[in-house]
Amino acid sequence: MTHQNARRIGIVRDKRYLLHKPGHTHPEHPNRLKAVYRMLDADFSGDLVRIEPRPATLEHLELVHTPSYVKRVLKTADHGYTSLAPDTPASAETYLASWLAVGGCLKALDELFSGKLDACFALVRPPGHHALRDRSGGFCVFNNAGIAARYAMKQQGTQRILIIDWDIHHGNGINDLFHNEKEILYFSSHDPMLYPYTGDWEDVGDGPGEGYSINIPLPRELEDKELVHIYREIAGPVMRSYEPRLIIIAAGFDAHEKDPIGRSRLTEEAFGMLTRLIMGFRSDIGDPPVLFILEGGYSPRALAACVKEVVQALVNPTLPETPVVAETRRAEDIVTRVRRIHRKFGIW
Ligand SMILES: [Zn+2]
Image 1 (cartoon, protein in one colour):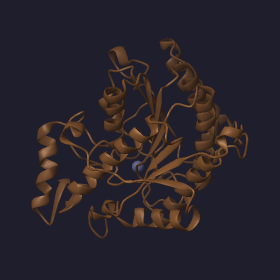
Image 2 (tube, rainbow, N blue to C red):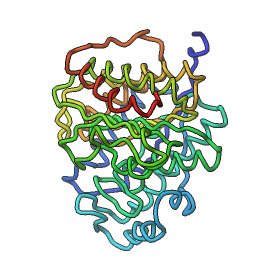
Image 3 (spheres, rainbow, N blue to C red):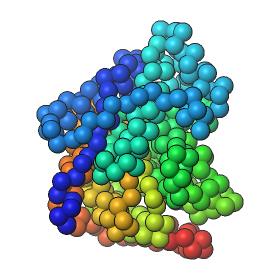
Image 4 (cartoon, rainbow, N blue to C red):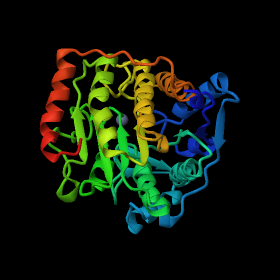
């Protein structure tokens, strides 16, 4: 399709995201983003639209978080080094990076909704998908994706928001925030044997949100093409039936085989294939705005390679036309199980 030839792809980036310093040995280290930014400068100079973040406002943060929790994060500025949770330390400027991480996502949404961009990748830290209403955890401070979804509902009146979370950890923060709602559909694939040990098959949402949480536990041995098969068979029908008016990807890359925390076997190519697949389904439903938000990924080198695959797929979505899939028994079993659990809701 010719209109896809000149895609305007936005990138949120800012040096101030490096100011959150959880410690030299902490996996969520500023070197992660440094490696990603270096890769962008080397491989995509001139191809991308740079989006400058602005700090979020209190009102934005309180779309999701309690005022007392927001205050607690702000108070970390009084200390050179302190801790928001046992695994989530804070340095004196963590608050600034966190405010800007949310603000960068919201600025990206404004640009997407104004039609200036076809897609955007917010390359921010700290990550967000484990952050709860009133609590940090799993290296996350504010729930960037959750706040972005609420902001779109409030500012744009966006109906039906799909959040796809391919980080290898279950995004318990996002899952909890929207557990009772059908306006935001949370779709996660993850290793259930890793932190936070949630996101079971039967976790499908509650009340009016029943059926609007789709949790897909993955075995560690799963390979690239099997994951693409699972996404093709589940995310495809979900997108066509739900017809989201905004797609947010909680894009973590700790399922990479070289990641020091995840224990999976994927390569960077999996993420390029997933991106092309999702962008293909998206064009079937009228190209709603799509925002990628960085979550995990703890080998700076592997992380940069994965982000490169995604950005390449966004800049040039048509090659290859159809991602290669592998319909192995174990991939097919996963698809069958998710379908069986969700059939009764009649949503997809
Ligand atoms: Zn993760």
